Image (cartoon, rainbow, N blue to C red; front, side, top):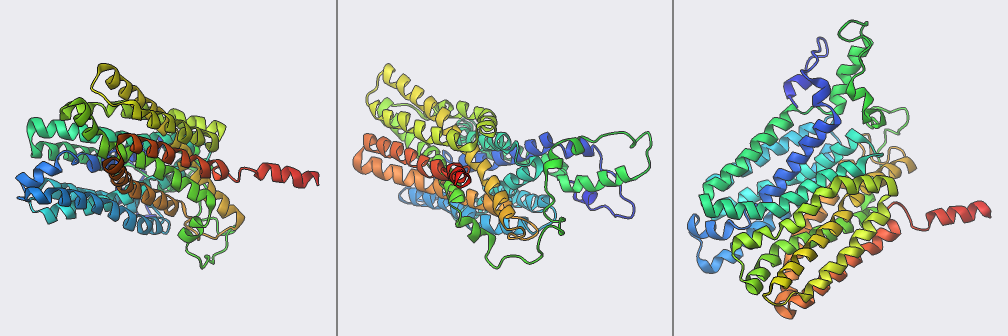
Length: 479
C-alpha cells in the first residue's frame, strides 16, 4: 500500500514502483485472500491449544478451564458483531479503503503479540478481542475492496476464491495448531502465527488500491507521448477498472443529500439481503459445528487420538478448494440455483451421518465420504450469496441514486455478512452440542440436515431477485 507513495504531492507526483502489478486484480485478490486466510487461521489455531495453555501458562484451575475457553471464543465473535458495522460505515466514507484495511493490520499485530506473550487469562481475552476487531476490518473492507476491484460481472468467481481461503483456514488451523503444539510447544504456535502475519504485512503494504492507481495513470495519459508513456496501455486500464463505478466522483448523477435512514437499516429491510445473510449463517454454522462436535465424536466412537481427529477435517477442507470454480459457475448460471442446490444437497450427507455408530473400518470410511460430500455441497453456498449481496446493493442504488451517500454501501453490506458469520461461529457449536448431549448423535445430524435445507427457502425466493419477478413482468407486458 505504501502510504507515503500513495500520498505523494500532487505538484510533483512520482509513479509508484511496479504500479501496474501492485494494483492489478490478481495482486489485490492475493492480498485479500492471504488476509482472510490469516484471520481465519488465527481464529482456529488456538482451538486445541487454549485448554492446555490456560492451565500450564495462565494457572487457571481445572474446573474453570471450560468457562474461560468458552468466554475467550465468545469474545471473538462479539468483537466482530460490534466492530463490523462500524468498520463498514467508516470504509464507505473514506476515499481510500486501504487506509481502513491497513488499520486492521496493526490491530492484528497487537493481537498476535498478546497471544504469544500473555500469560494472564484476561490478557488472552484482550488478545481475542483484538483478533475479532481485526477480522471485522479484514472481511468487511476486504470483500468490499474485491467488489471495487472487479465489478459485478465476475464477482462470484472472486468471492468464491476469497471465501474458500476462509473456509480452509478455519478447517486446517486446529489440525496444524494441535500438531505444532504437541511437537514443539506453545511458542512454536506463536511463531507459526507470526510468520503468517509477516506475509500479510508485506502484501498489504505493497498493495495499491485501484482508485489510487488511477490518478497516476490519468496523469501519465494526459502527458505528451514519450517512449516511457506513449502508446502503453496499462493493465489497470484494461482490467475491470472500466467496470468500476466511481461512486465518490460522479456527483452529476447523484444527489448530494443522503437519505436520513442509515444504509445498514435500508439493507436489512431487503429480503434479498436477508436471504444472503441467512445463507452464509447456515453455511458457517454447520462448519463451526464440525469444529465443536466432530473431534469428540470420533474420539468416543473410534477412539482416535488428536492427530487422527484433526486429519479427518481434510475431508471437508479439500473440497473447499473448488470455491473459484463454484464462483465462476454462479457468474454464468446466476446465484439462486447454485446456492439452493448447495443448501438442499448438503442436507443429505448431514442426515446420513446418523448411520455412523460403531467402530468398524466401513463406518470410518462412510464418515469420511459423508464429510467429503458435505464439503462439496456446502461450498456451493458461499460464493453465490456473497456475490448477490454486492448485486443487490448496486440495484438498490440504481432505484434511488444517492440513497447511500457518495461512498455507497458495499462495506456496510459485507459488515452484515461478517456479523452473520460471527454469530454462526457461536450458534453452531453451542446448539449442536446441546442437541447431541440431550438427544444424541442421530438427533443432532437430523437437526443439522433440516437446518441446512432451511437455507434453501429464502434463497430460492429472493436470491438473484424475486423468484416470480420475470413472470410478473411478462404478465404486465401481455396485459
